[in-house]
Each structure stands twice: as structure tokens, then as C-alpha cells.
Amino acid sequence: MVGKILKESLVRLFKNKKAISKKELLFALKLLQYLPVPYTQREKYELARWKIEEIKKAIEREEPLVFQYPNRILAEIHPNCKEKIIKNFLLGVAEKYRKNWKETEKEGSFTPATVLISPLARCNLSCQGCYAKNYPKETDLPEEIFEKIIREGEEMGVFFYTILGGEPLMIFERIYKIFKKYNTAYAQLFTNGTLLTEEIAKKLQELGNIFVNFSIEGFEKETDERRGKGTFKKVISGMELLQKYGVPHGFSAVYSRKNAERVISDEFIDLMIEKGCLWGWYFLYMPVCGDRDISLMPTPEQRVALWKRHLEIRSKKPIVVIDFWGDAPLVGGCIAGKYYIHIDNEGFVEPCIFTHFSKDNIKEKSLKEIMASDVFKEYRKRQPFSKNLLLPCPLIDYPQQFREIQKIYGLKPTHSGAETLIRELAPQLDEYSRKVHQIFDKIWEENYKKKN
Image (cartoon, rainbow, N blue to C red):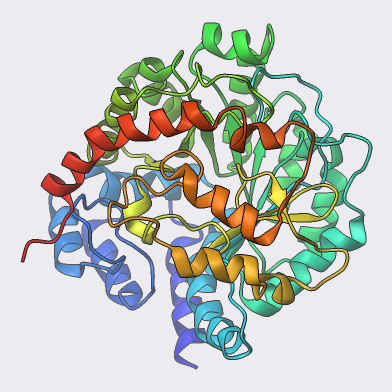
């Protein structure tokens, strides 16, 4: 009863509002203070819990993340999308955690916070170094299997789904059908943006339960160089179209040696905010598709720059940016096989979007069975792979860890060339790991390690 009243109160309070005062924000904070959502602005490592007094003070100071950002959401997002963010995501997370997670654990399994699904590997672009470029293109994930993942995920309490590709807008009608049926679910969708149309934008507004992330490499030069001439302008047009219909959206940037400075610049972030982006993802370039060298990977010094800069952006601008590696302290390190998994277009279940090896297929087993597998239990037993949570990854920060797991459990590559990561590239990744540790171990000691 209390949960129902809370949900209805928040929806009534925010659905049709275009702005919010300090007084109203403080009232909403009081209602939300028991939800298990991390306060992502803090820089010191602590387990993700609300720090109510700090947030109150930040609201009083009108800081971008806690005052300007909520006002952006209210002003820029369509009422239907706002309602789904509140019901399906914010309150849905708490409800699913309370009702489903503990029950799943009692049964000997584990609920991932998000399930990444690549329902197809086909794409209308051919981007240099794409993590998905070597997956077999001939087969799409059958619609009934796609729906099975969502159905079983809802039963287990998955917080939200991440739809990837290939290019998911190539099968948008399939995605629309499933998320219209499962209208209490929430998803984020990653797209190159070139196939977005007015009709799709209208349907996203109607659904309200899909958040869109546009892949972009920086400005026109960087984006077109990797994705093809004219792509940047199409991405910007896509963002403007979703702005028009009030559909929440953000950006996703592959952080490489070539574009590192551009994608964290004030000019780039200001452009993304201008085009309506509420969220931004930074993923390190990963040599996972048969690459024979690691020359596009960001240097250790560039990783430090991203770590420093993304915290600065969050503190000074009304946008949430996530450094997928540098924010690992907020979730206890690597979350592969634990809080997230990836299911490819052939149904193979991988521990991570960058770990193209698998033992189980969703066509043959339930999601609950796969999450209870020995492979994923091994991941969870070993995590975190180090006390230094700024270096969470068993592929590039502790490459020997994945090699051991792959050998013990006989994980098979899910596409040709995937094995290069653990064979030909092993010496280069070992050296890369050594150099990264030389810098980040000191940063961890000075900024995150709990003082006795």
C-alpha cells in the first residue's frame, strides 16, 4: 500500500511539471531516500548508498547534477516518458529488488541488473574496430527467444534491458512489439542513429519505456572517419528529432587513442547537452574482434584523463556521464556475469559485451539456469579481481584472470578471431596491464582506499 501511494504521488508530482523548486526536490528526496540507488557524484569510494544530507546541501547550492539536471528532465522529456522513468525505472528497481532478487538467490541463482541483448548482428554501417563486426550476420535472434529473455528477466527482477546490435533500428518493429507487451519493463537502446525516422520517434514517445543512446566518436571529423561520411550529421539530426518528441536520449563514445581529448572536451559535452543528451557513456576501445595490435586502445595516461574529467563534468554540467571503467568503484568492480551479461544474436550468453566467449545458449536453458552456471559463479567468486576497483577488467587490467577462467571451463569463442585476445595479443595486454597499474595503483591509494 505504501509503495503504491509513493508511486502515485511521484507520478502526480512530476509527470506534467516543467520545472521543480528546491522545496519540491527536497520533498521528493524524502520520499526516495530508501531506494537502493547510488549517489554517483561522490568521488570517494563507499558502497553505493544514498547520502541524504550531502544531497540536501547540493540542492541548496543548486549544483548541476542534483538541481539543474532534474529540471532538464522535467522540461525536456514528454510526460509519458517521465511516467515510465518513475514507474518502471526509479520505483521499479526498488520493487524488483525487494520482490524478486532475494527469491532468485534462494533458488541458487543470481539476478543481473541488466541483460544486454543483441537481437541481430546486421548493420547498415561498417565501423572500424566495432566490437560486433565479426559476429555471424546471417542469423537474427528469433522473436520468441527475444521475448523469452524479457519474460524470464521480469520474473527474476532484471532492472532494465540493453538493446544492441548490429543496428537495432533495423528491426525496430520487433522491439516495439515486445516492449509494448512488456510495458512495465525498461530498456536502453544503442544506435548509430542513421535509421531514426519521425515514425520511430513517435512510437518511442508512445512506449515511453526506452531510452536511446547515440553512438558518436566526437565531432564530424572523428565520427565520419570511423563510421562513414555524413554519419555525424545524421546522428545530430536524430538527437534533434528525439528532442522534438521528448524522448530521453544520451550519447555513447568509444574512448580511443585517436579521439580521447575531443570526446571529453567542454565543446563536445556542451554540444551533447544542447542536443538534449541527458546521459553519456564512455567505453574504452577494446581489441576484441581479431585485432593484431592494441594501437587504438587509450594509453594509461589517457585513461587517467578520462577518470579525472568525467568526475569534473558530473560536478559542473547538468548531464550524467559514466566512465565504464573509472566508475567501477560505485558497483564494486567488474560486474560481468553478476550484474550484467550479454546475449548475442545466436543466443550465446557471454559474461560481458567485450568477452566473446561462451558456454551456454539461451535457446537451450533458462536465464535462471545460466546465471546459476559454474562459469558465472566463478566470476562472482573471483570478483572483484583486485582491491583496486579502478582497474576492474579481467581482459585488459588482469588479463591472466580471464585466461584462467576460459581454460578451466573450456569457454568457446562466439565468432572467428575472438581467440586472438587470449593468444596473439596476450604479451601486449600483459605489458599494457603493467603500465596501467603503475599509474592507477597510486591513484587508488591516494583517492579511494579506506583509511584505517
